[in-house]
Length: 417
Image (cartoon, rainbow, N blue to C red; front, side, top):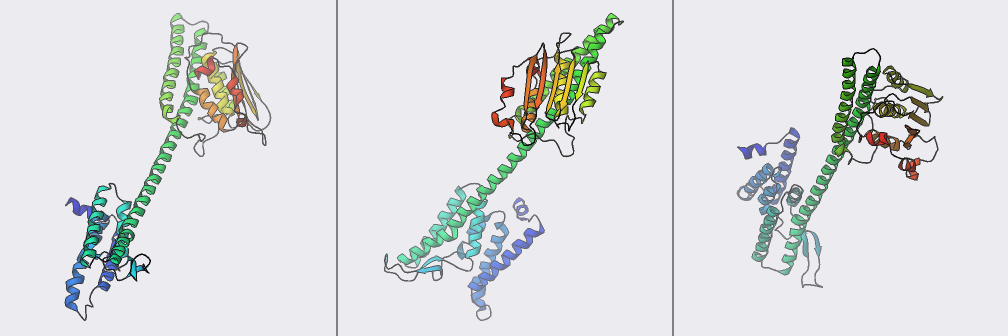
């Protein structure tokens, strides 16, 4: 029953295809046999058994082409009176009219199943055994027919042209299809890694920023006058809890990005329709307003002209770093069409954030993809994050190797986000 289920066709198209194949094979087999009107006995004795072999071959040929090839073995190119070409081998043998690649009406069907055998082969051993048997049949036919050298030439060319060459072409085609499938799977896996990296980046940018603002609010409550010791302690615990949550988020993002770092070097792209900037779609004024509402001392300077697409991401990263590593520091944000800068002063209280985050690393990738340069450096006891984007028609800074970001000294901020 299991084998019968494997013989079932998956759809109507396969049924029609195999039915047409069977009809064509039966017509060609009938053309090889006796006339059913003049010699019905000879037709029944020769053609009907061949039709049976053809029926069995078509039934099993889709699932097991090698079995179909063996079933059609009696209909192989063992008649050497007709061939693809006729040559004169008197320069080599005293023979005229030697048939090269003998052909019969059934030869195209045998060639087709030999091709399918190679295309679908998963192991070489079964095909090797089958070709050995086919060769023995060819040798036996030549010996029975007298063993003339011309017959040997015809038989060898028949084996090569009807069985070997189609099989090798099928093997080549199968390997090409397998390679194409592996390439498609690799592209899909790389796309998943890119999406994974994008999710990790957005989680870090959005949730890390929110947690940093929570820590700022808690730090403000901790220093507010008129609070009972228990409330001050609770505010301090809230600030430390926000810092711990930021660290756990960093570890989770690190796990998400581990495999994604090996993804292709194509820039990470946002989904279609998602606004430029941070993952929450906030503008630079919105980010500054929310940070100021959390208690951060911040100023904003917006120059005229269009705002860069990366402006919100740069400002969000700079504010997050300032909130985590420079609690209570004054922050200055300036945005122009080709320069985004976030600068903070020295911290007024002890920072609780840990080192080793991924914020600036991810931001560098995005800036580099846009052809810009990122500079992160300690400045006057504080920190400055600046991103320069090329003007229209200006040489891509990546051509110089991005030296600006390589020579900038690393600081607590750069090591932590």
